[in-house]
Amino acid sequence: MKQRVFASKLVMALLAATLLPAQFALADEAADAALATKVKAAIDANPTLKAFNLKVSGKNNDVTIEGNVDEGLQMAEVGAIAEKVDGVKFVFNNIMPKN
Image (cartoon, rainbow, N blue to C red; front, top):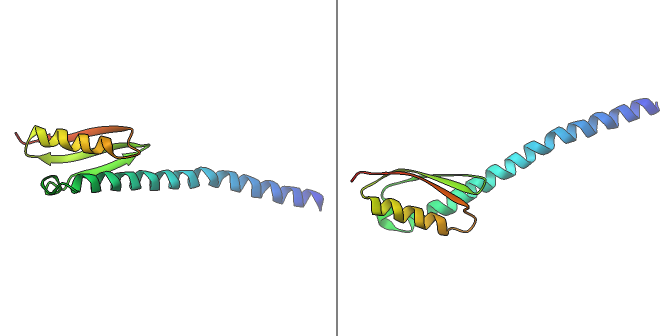
């Protein structure tokens, strides 16, 4: 009987241990999405930049911005806005200017 109880507890402990990384991954994904949303909102606060409908994604406090703008100055402006958002560590500015 004691062996069965011990075995049951051992199985439960192993199951719980395998679920922990998944919980952390979900929390990280939520934090990444929240950061990307904050950056997108900061960019979209500028009506000129909002018109370009740039794509923003986040991973581990880094953000990637993709899309097209009309000029190189707009590309630089987007990067500067993103860098100022609280929580952003690094900006991958993959925007392509048309001119």
